[in-house]
Image 1 (cartoon, rainbow, N blue to C red):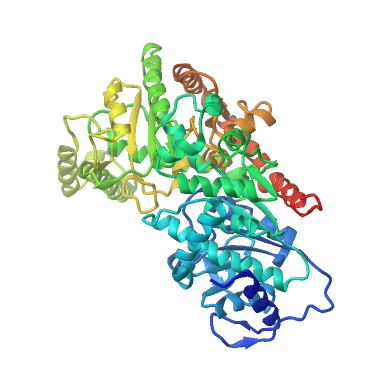
Image 2 (cartoon, rainbow, N blue to C red):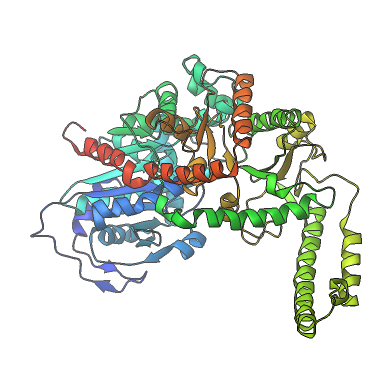
Length: 627
């Protein structure tokens, strides 16, 4: 690895080097900056730049228009190069400016760097670094991490090895930019996977300006899954010992080092701030709550129409899934859903299922006319869609074909009969072919077993926590049950043969989203749900739920219900969640329509236009003389 001194000399010698255009070594003259006043640049460094893996991708992508509006092309994102993702989301583009010149310096040292634009709203500049050029330096970097940060990197963890490789290239790129630029380079690191270079540079005496954001403490996520009343007991835990217990000590220590090293430390919510103070040893300097590009979801005057159209699609699914066994009134049917990463307790799936069982009892006892279809959508290990799911969905499509063709035959014959005059017998207007096809379809349609609770062939059915909880609660989709369960252990796409709709369309057809998380540093899903005009339930252990409840009065009237889980028992939370869902079931249609409109309006308070000032304040704090 080149030392910082050699790298600086290389930067100085290369200032007027020509940039590379479209990935070739065809050169163009570097822009002269002799008469240009110093200008600061902002680099946001993250593992999920042009690389969709989780929620941080959504953060970086959705706020890009606001960052570009403020910084223009002085803003760029830096991440590792992923060829398959970059082919879809990234387009190379070269200007001969400092970004290109820094890329040339890295290419000289054997690191392939691509400069271009992320093809999302705002089209921000992006720098993607191919990690193959630094693989041979990883062993030396591991020794440096041990010496400087006292962190022993596990050699058998491929992800951590990639993180170490990225730290080599990210450090060289930041130092190259500083050597070229007249102004200040402000580096904003997202999550521990992007911030190893920050800790190393600070350990070497680097005086650059840096912000670090942890979106969720790594050890907090593990502990929340295994420790009851996690937040009320935070001060009891030795975070290093806990990390060692879960086999993530190196990752935890790297995150802790980044929190200690940065000029300004931020996180997304007050609830995560508690974790940071106790588990990382530093309280955040600023909170940067996650916004959303709400305009992307707004339907305005089409909101109710979209709900009706997509609800009709869900009715089709319901008829194909439930009606071969028994039927119920679709006009009195409500669709509730939850979705997210398969973290059974953290996402509140356990709490939700227990509350749904209690809701079922309440609806039966009150002789309610309502039926609730609950869709539990996540990603669990499966072999394929279950045969029964496909079979009856296919049969239902056959009914639709028959209905369309028979209707057309009747229409043509009816016109002739009406014109000719005389008595009408609609039975005579249906050809014998279609009568036979109808009888065959109806004979194959009926079944003498209950609608299944899961749509797929789950690999570990006996060990699946959702299925085990449903068995414990005896929720088997009986005919008399008012709450029916559809566990769909795969994400919903437009190619899905059961729903024939994409995820966003499915949400718009539902009536309520249920997300009472036990651990959720922020939680985009309820916000996305509200932005599409669908009321949602969150919790005060979710960053979004706690933030909204604290800063927005009348949130429940607007369609955001918040379960109080902080400092309360699970049983108390089940009772509260059950009551929320039961009261929702009592609403009349006109009340639900009014609440959908209020939900969509409420979501606009969380647009990035409203929340981006938190990032501005963090950046201003870092750039200040005291930062």
